Length: 300
Image (cartoon, rainbow, N blue to C red; front, side, top):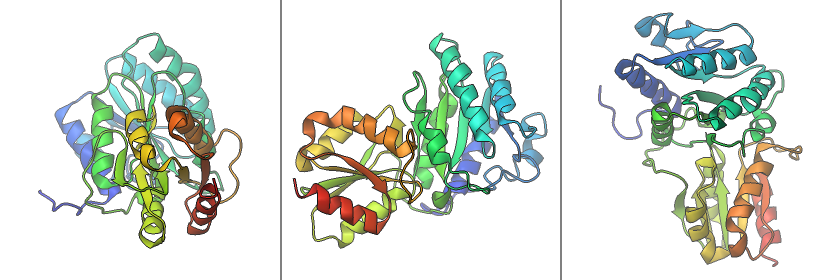
């Protein structure tokens, strides 16, 4: 059934993309604690068990470390597993860093897609800190889409790749119905002379809101791909302003060492060092934090 542009939410777009991929390619499998009858913790796999059966929509035990290990074995056997990781992700991330990255660097075809919600989960766990450990691993691409079309595009590309892909899905974006079209890499949403705001996931809208209301001429960039960073687009955006403020889609408290925002900022700084006129900074994507960072940056 055709949908008008913007009619699908991010969650619905993910579900539709998975359905299309599983219909076209019988090697695509879904794994996760709740991907079956529950339809995923955030209902992104709803209806897929009924359509494709339990041999392709696999309900796994409460051990995401074991689930990632199973996905690696299935990929080496010619399957294309898509894993939804939610609770207990710390052990799974250790499995990723020890096994997934190591095997991939040994040039095995390893078409594993890990889907990880980005935000505060029940029990107070925030995947911002855990996801930061994934950046910088050789051969792994890490994306965080902010719109339905971008979510579908990133997932489709990941399902066609023979290398592992990590897709961080912002909890605050699951209901987003933006009709902005998808692009590869980073997207310059608006140019600005005074400073450039960069973000991913739900933080993108916070940057656009500030740019619309601020007396300053602010640029806004949707990073989309967090690793490897789109250096070319980043340089293009910063040539005009020379000031970089990263709005992190994460907790409002100070970031702990190794958190996602810190890792992204480090990659951005390396990629754009020659264009920076003031120290870059990462702050939570709130209006107050962004205004303080902007005021500080403009003093240079």
